[in-house]
Image (cartoon, rainbow, N blue to C red; front, side):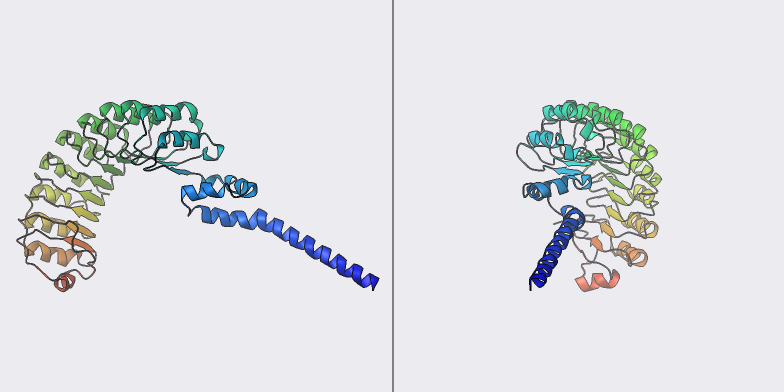
Length: 365
């Protein structure tokens, strides 16, 4: 009986050892893999909260640099101090994306602190979103761009303090930008577009919405030198003329074009746009000089079109709709002809007969 008890005790001990070893293997190999997968789907605040659960979990999470590549303090209070504090932590030493959208307290002094205190952590930064950070000036742009040599995506929507000097700092310090959002930066001029054109020949996306100081001359610089553009947003810019619009034909890789409010765009200019055969999305809302002739050119040239808005154009009729149906019926999923008084009002079923893949019938309200 004694031997039997000893054997049972030995087996139990071995079983416990095996279980402990299995748990160690689970903790060391399986759990970190699971955490790595799950953590990429968690919000930043939730990921940080997990660090407080246990020392082991903390060590496991910080051992994976790939899950600490993004910082998002959008719409947060005290975001300036938060981002400086975060980038001072070793786990963010390889950060690639920083989003500070509408973080109202972000000022030049915070960007200058980042340059001084966190220079090493910013060397791999690829994407910087400063949208709506209206307290930032050219001085702040100089500081932050000087610290981010590998920046590829820069967005500073709705900032009226940035001038041509800020863009000069950007192109001087960041040589690899491929996406640039200057929407609402009303104090930049043609000089900024010249700087962008001369330094960013590989630019793929450019948003110039409501940059009202721009003229044909500045836009032509972009169209002549940035031939890799795939997305161009010229929303609410009524000052351009066909002189510039005709050069859009040079953008052979263009897929997205927003010309909403292009009051000087004529059928002749639109015929040149039609040479962008890869165009997928085209917004012609309130392009009041356009008629059937221009839209028919688009139908015949842009046969991959998926999105088209003709909202508010009174000079178009059923002729252009029929041309679009003949050429683009297999691709168009969004079409807005509201306010086009020359086009017969049709029911949803009638539109679907012309465009069987249509999903959205109204873009503007």
